[in-house]
Image (tube, rainbow, N blue to C red; front, side, top):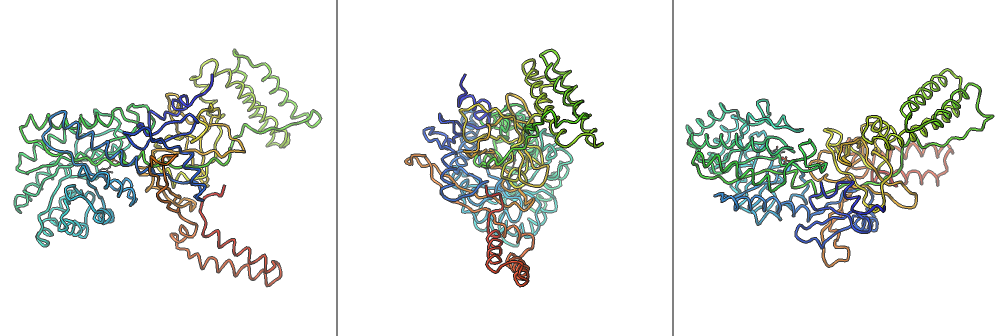
Length: 637
Ligand SMILES: *Cc1c(COP(=O)(O)O)cnc(C)c1O
């Protein structure tokens, strides 16, 4: 049977993790549907890559689909608005985007613009983020929420923002901040807008479970909340306490955890209201997850709910608690970051080679084999010859043992390098036959899985895990990896990815395929005549900013793609942002590229003076060094 685009969609889980933003066209190219309501707009990633090549943008590179970002802002706001309408909830949704998830100016600007009609605001967690957020020309209806630990300058900037007419909410993380807020409000004569962050007793699951519970880093305990209210009453500032906030961690996999947290938060909200605080906003923080592995389960890389289920459950749970206590419904605020930005960008990297220990071909003629080696080669050849569907496990164990013994013989100097290479080649051939038998017998047996793992090749990709997909290394976050082309061909090569850093942690070996987490997936066989590009997806949240410069591989080239219906390929590249050059990254490590070039020149000059290098050669060498300084840090392949 022919392998179709649909088979690829299914194999790579594209529809399962793609939230309808990704698909495959009949040419077997991976495509993007950037606009929710217009599926006639379909952009082929291969077309974008071709245009990038025309414009001399080198890879690896980040592609941002700005329309996807807009669609996500709309998805979130529409979900909450329709839940509110359906359930007859009597207040509004006022979401904010936490800029720490991706602070790129173009990302924040796009979100602010798309969110304008919903009075969608921004959240900052540090002074620098506050300054960035203040510079954004925001709808004056929307909220600007300030979290994180604050010093006096942070609070002064907040007061200035308040004087600019912005709805700046200062969320108190520590009691000591309250005193300063009151003092500065007096000094600036502004009416502050105060929020309080509560540390919930509830403990969430998932990779960020430390964000909630008694040991959480942020927020006030119940006794501190009581103290805060007393302080605000005494200073006559209780009227300004308007927002209640909690945050249970990011990527919460299970909807029941969210319901539990909302219930507890809503109860505390009610109690604080009963103590006399005129709370108007209920801020549920982040935690809205995305379906990285496409399994729609409670696994750490997935979520067992949809966006609209999330919104309905939040609204319903909060409404029940408020109605029971007979207090007015508060406006609902959420601080979803991951769910807004993750889908909009991907990293495109080219596979530049393959590392496969099982691929070598060694030939040895009979008279080249020594007496000592013959013992092994003959034994291993005979064993493989006798392999059947009945005895393959036993035969495999035998050939593993022969390989092991030949290794010891090599160390003792009994067999040559070429002989050992030949024996290893036979071992790999035998392993492949054993795997074939085993897959025919039971593909999910331990034996099959272990041999598949051993026979997985590594595709060498021109990128750095540490710069571009930090979470896959740091917290074992699974990210979908899909070839951008050839999706109407069956992928036959079991492979995982390694990057070009000199670090054995620089690899991606976590995939979700055929319904299971595996250490490999399948890609296509490489052919010399055609570039093979892989896309690493869902990298728009956190990955863009958490990257580091391991081995001095710098930030990536980046293009911003917008959809354009009148164009035959449905898109145009609105902006190209050049990634870091070698000189940029060296400067961050305190080097001065001019002095570096000068010092290299002096060394070459000395060789010229001695007549070792001709002047013409010397000039060429210096030029090459200087040009390399101004070049991209990744491999030129
Ligand atoms: C990080 C953070 C968020 C964003 O969380 P996501 O899970 O990415 O939506 C929201 N609020 C606070 C206080 C945060 O620290």
